[in-house]
Length: 321
Image (tube, rainbow, N blue to C red; front, top):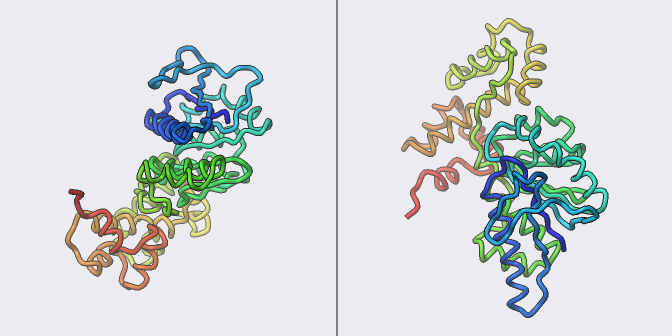
């Protein structure tokens, strides 16, 4: 099987290193068992200036007529998404051509932005880094964004969430293109917990302010100032000079969230920070983050984070020894 790794400009080194390490290791499994290795791995570049080497692998330009079984798009190493897409637009027609000829295409983390720019994700599910989904949603409204997902797959198009979630994508592909036992063997080698099905608890909600809508910006400021003391969103936005319907429409348009959802995420993020860094009881955390009903707080926290407040504290407030 021909496995191609797209060396997109400004790619994250860790992504490529992980791909090479996992599939190289699987080739070794087969050789140790006296079998022919299953993957022919190639690093692919579009320009001689991008022809870097990773260990024994040197980048080559895609040969005319070559069709790949699987193509990987690594994550980008910074958040300049528009620049990264522009710098890599020459890959788009080639990726289209490969997909039409039967190649599976898989993106790691923010590599989903380049995959989405091809249009191949339109109408299909996709995930990316948990903190990048608001920008992704804004740029590619035709994609069915599943922010909480670790991996998505439809019609031979795959995406994975941030960083270590890419290992779950690779385990899925190993199970598909090799078999379950190979995937389990690789998971054990790389210490991958194969039961992870959410990436919500890795996320950090940041206030979405890269827009020019002053009305929405004012509402955001009011939420940031009053999230812990106001009982309802109406109390917070009462002085914002816009009708409720108009504000909700504009807010959703520029942030991807309604004002109520934005308030909820602001409160949950405050609760997460307290759980990570303070000795406050769960009740105190609830009150300081703007809630007054413990059952409601626990329910909303689990919905947004994927685990209970206690489980979150146990996971992130301790120290590894």
